[in-house]
Amino acid sequence: MNILLTNDDGIEETGLRALYAALSEVGDVTAIAPADDQSAVGRSMSSRVAVEEHELGYAVEGTPADCVVVGMQAIETEIDLVVSGCNRGANLGAYVLGRSGTVSAAVEATFFETPAIAVSMYIPGGDVAFQSFDPDLEEYDEPARVARYLAANTVESGVFEHADYLNVNVPMSAEGPCEMEITEPSSVYAMDAVIDEEHVVLRDRIFDRIDNGNVPDPDGTDRRAVLDGRVSISPLTAPHSMNHHEALDELAAEYS
View 1 (spheres, one colour):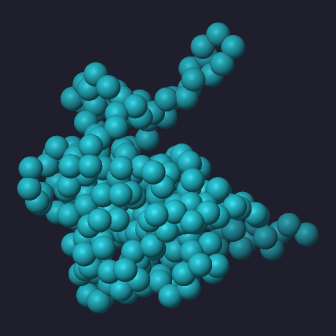
View 2: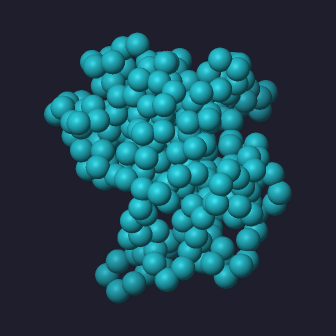
């Protein structure tokens, strides 16, 4: 199996190296990842990028979506699976999916009709924010184990006949394999914007609520599963859905 590995934290990120080692046990892995941090860029696309050889594959001066297109079209055209991650920090909730570079790389792969898995690691809140916390290679053991298991078993199982990609979130502090749960993205939304002198500070208040033990997510959702110590797997589709309704037909007919 030929596996294209990418991420949004950059090709030197420890989480990518953890997945590279794990996935190499089940396939031929080529890392094609951003040269530097491209977190939260969504599916931003460049028109021209520099590409340099790297010990793991190729470093791209561009976004995660760029990396997938470069890998599929310019470097490795025979790809059986795209894996994105492991992201340092979780990608949980429906509203996060479109802004996450990790998830967006998986979405980009689906337009090439290629199975894809986005893998992220949930880092519990505490004295150190997950943005500044740099986990050791060993702390990615469970995400790496999960990624290896899914890569080895999903492609031939028929999973991707029903889902375009999997959004996978794994607890960091797991000791040994965790229970897996099939989930749907949480719909709880808690973005906030506060004026601070000359700036407006945007903040996701859901993490404040989680740190205080006030978890609003019901059973069956991705965030609930991860906070309870389980691996969350959300089987998702990539293209936007279309809901045709007679009310819009009537408006269109009346326009002229």
